[in-house]
Length: 148
Length: 117
Image 1 (spheres, chains in turn purple, brown):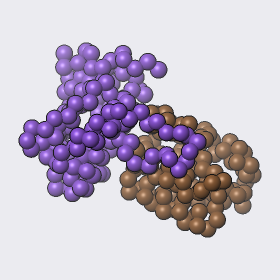
Image 2 (image 1 turned 135 degrees about the vertical axis):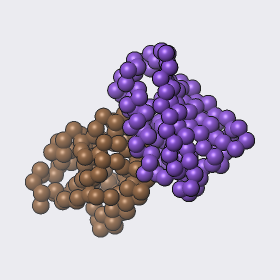
Image 3 (image 1 turned 30 degrees about the horizontal axis):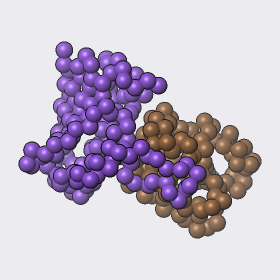
Image 4 (image 1 turned 180 degrees about the vertical axis):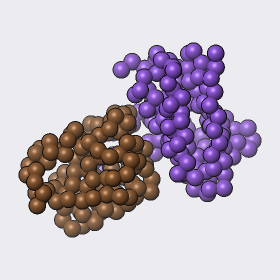
């Protein structure tokens, strides 16, 4: 049986936290544990931050639709907005990133650009498409795939 | 950003008082650390006991703050909530920052007496 959560927010940074918290709460009742839910909350926050900052240039006149679905095997969160497209090289670079830095080399530590690598690390599938007007980012986490 | 600062020995303890550390607050943290570093501070303990959530921009501010102290500087964390520990683990930054459950333990490790100056 599917359960669904649908939210729409304006592209305002102060609206992001609540969405993250709602999606984290939506993870209850699935096999995901509390840490899994925290990781998914973080991913949703990072995706929304990116949409507002990079897709809309921090303009607050846009809208983002968030649709979360949970089934017996996975939870999926779809984020749809009408901002600028995500550049292919950004998606590609993040997918290949393993946050490989030398912890002892302070000067080389990344200060930015960790959002998409975090998402790729937490989620089992990150899908992106553009329907001409909208960015549609789909984050999927299957149950039982992340041993800890 | 609501924060308190306290000098304990040669360490400045910066206690964040808001539940989230993200973009705008991260900038203010970085500014605060820049001021302290410019004034000669070389050891900072960031107390995150009140912080429930940090995103990657907040983490970026913490990393930037570490860099501001330069070689020989010490930047430690204490009071990490579980979501913050999750973020550090996911990004491998748990291998970069020394963190402690309690402020007192961090100050002992820094060699600072536990009583404020």
